[in-house]
Image (tube, rainbow, N blue to C red; front, side):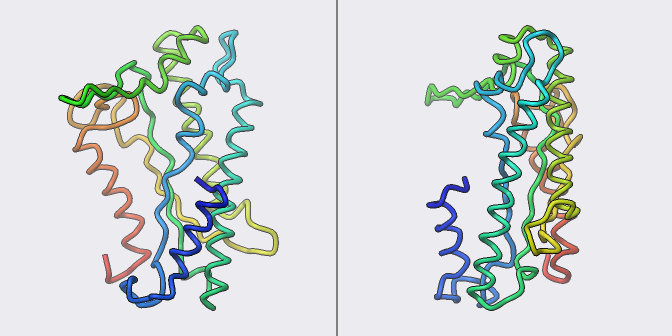
Length: 219
């Protein structure tokens, strides 16, 4: 997501000289980002699992978390570059991210009626390959999400900042434990990594709770 081409797109969008495209006539009021999940889950999830029953291969998993963190820090920096070009304080362009939820390795993917398309599963196959039963899989996924949250919380609380900076101006929406860890409607999981419609609404409310105080009187 943070290839140089995509960074250029972000920069061009934020500094678009036709400011009339932005409601405030200046630039974006903020950036909403959902990132990191595709780096971890899917067929490549097996890379980060121990084959001897110990769950996450911690050193390897720390490596992918470091890569995701680097991407976030690149995003912070490209935001700062845009702010410098616009001659505004980077604090005027906050970034909001989230940490996903405790998904279930149920083996259920997505089927789209009439289109014969199928996606997933994203978790159960690599976990099965590495020899874990369902109970063990639930714990491994929970451990992965908890570690992912801790990494992002470090960025949000500014324990990790760009050199010479005092804040990342990054706000973390804690989306953990929004869903129940089952497939029961309405707040369970429709498949391995997606909730039902009501679950998406519950997640949106968590975003609302963070966005509203950031933009008082506007949301």
